[in-house]
Structure formats: structure tokens, C-alpha cells
Image 1: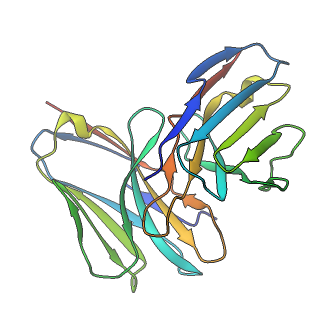
Image 2: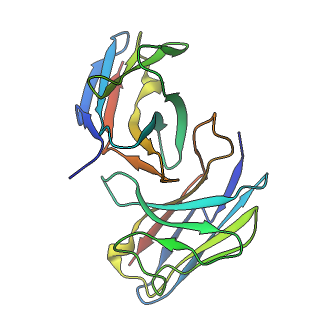
Length: 114
Length: 111
């Protein structure tokens, strides 16, 4: 299975600022997925990041708030912009290396906005 | 309406007990059903199920899918404190590349 390095592991940020989360995969993958997990909730997909094209955002998520970059097949970033306390969540990137294996997740970023 | 529904929401057992976690899902465009263990932040892959009636097993954990009744169970035998975690069920759909997660079952194993 793929190994994903995600950073930062955690951060405490002031409201109104932005944080960029990075994910590096040890193999080339076509799609990378960004999820959010609010406290006590399950995982919700934010967007799908494809190399060479704009990310596809799910309902309720917009590019201005969560800009994504995907410069190559092994790397992606998610920025949480103009943060408010409601953005306090765990953010996870994920890939699906093969059809015969489950999706793999990065180690997660725990974001607290104060 | 949630596509994937898990029960119970939480469970407290003693070490050595056997637990069964439930997951029901929608049939539309079903491709596979996955189970994950989430201890801190990152979900860890446990099983992927695509065929009905075939049990997948890994140590004390096992899982099976019932495509007729649209549910899956995750069994953990001889539970240990290290099994304490949130167990997530997720559905993969044809025509969609991402997973749809249930709300999870929080399992607490006490000594």
C-alpha cells in the first residue's frame, strides 16, 4: 500500500489566518482526496485533487475557502483560508493505490482555531 | 439521508469479550464496503468486502458482507484494551472515486 506523509501533525491558529497542509505520497497516484472530520463526526470529503486540472469540490466546500494544489502525481496541498473556530477539525488526505486495496490515509492534521 | 449507518454508536466492553459492530449501506451503485480503525487521527485499513458471504479474517478480527440484506458486520473476539478505537465503515460506489463514511462506532475496552 502507499505511504503518505502529512504535515503539519497539528497546529493552533488565530482566526482570520490561513494554514497549508501538505501530503507527500511514496508512489504516483492519479487522484488524491481531502477529507475533514469535525469533532465527534465522521469523515466528509472536501475535494478530489487531480494532477493537471482544478480540484473537484463537494457541495458545501468552495475553492476560495479551501484552495488545493496538485503540482505532480505524488504531492498535494490543502489550504484552509480565513479560518474561524468552526474550521477546527482533523484534516486528512487519502489515496487509492490499487483497485484491490483499501484507500490509504495520511497521518492527519489536527487544526484548532482560536 | 446518510448512505452508511453504523450501530451501535458506542460500546463499552471488558477485556476478553466478543463484540459485533454493524454497518448498513445503500445498494445503488455499490462497489465495495470497507472497514477502518481510527485510534487518533488517521484511519487504518482493516478490510475491503466486495462479495457476499465470504468472511475476511485478520487475527481476532473478521468481517462479512451480506449483499442481500445490505449490511456488514465486524467481529472482534477476545478484545484487548488496544482495540479501543472508533471503527468506521465506508462504502465505495461505482462512478465515484471517494468513500462515503458512516458515523463510526466508538469501542472502549476496559481491563
